Length: 325
Image (cartoon, rainbow, N blue to C red; front, side, top):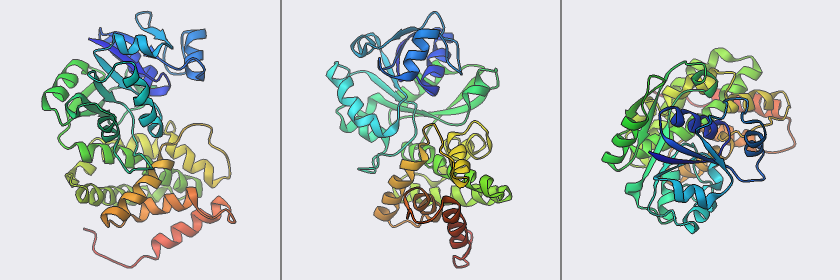
């Protein structure tokens, strides 16, 4: 299969490496002024993978679009709409698009597949690839399970069957709304997990897992999805990689923010908390954990982050007693 992976950061470089090893004809694209692209160009590797000689590394977007039967996108979620304009200007409207990214557009509350469709791509040509797993584990040969979902039943089965290996066992998703919302929301829960670690409250992570998944399930159901999706691989199944792993960007962000330190990498849970807060208000769903993260990241600046964290935890515990389900 001819594939172009657009975005050569952490996940993009791994996906290109993984799919080339599966025998696919892979282009790996990054903008010329992007640090991740420059490292791969100059050294042939990054901190995660060695650039396979079968991968064609390029900064030519037109060539990448022309090459591909399938375009896989792995960039920051908030940049997707503008990036789609560039892809379609290269004539990519009829390609298959697979989104290997997790987030919700802040300005609209749209799921990422909706952003692609609104850009002019048929919904039958759009799929998402999400689920647990860290590149550092995959490249050591440690396997995991992931999900490919699409409203097009034939497309998701074709992609999952083509991409599967001894390293990644794919499942066919059955709820695109739940898959996307769950995958995005787990990053928000990851920030809380980091806050708990930073405060020395790691014993609360079990409660976070239970209540976080329940909160996300309510939102998924209100949006028309299957609330059971919150308990699948895209959300609850990704908690180990998000709430406990030293490699998790979002958990690391939460831990460092408590200590008053600046996290140097992208934490998608920050903008996702703002987007989910809007969705909760739109659909009338109570999202106490999400709102706590939003207040932490966007709240008043006259308090230290540690003070914000302590206050937010006290506020959550002061909520009225209610039935669990």
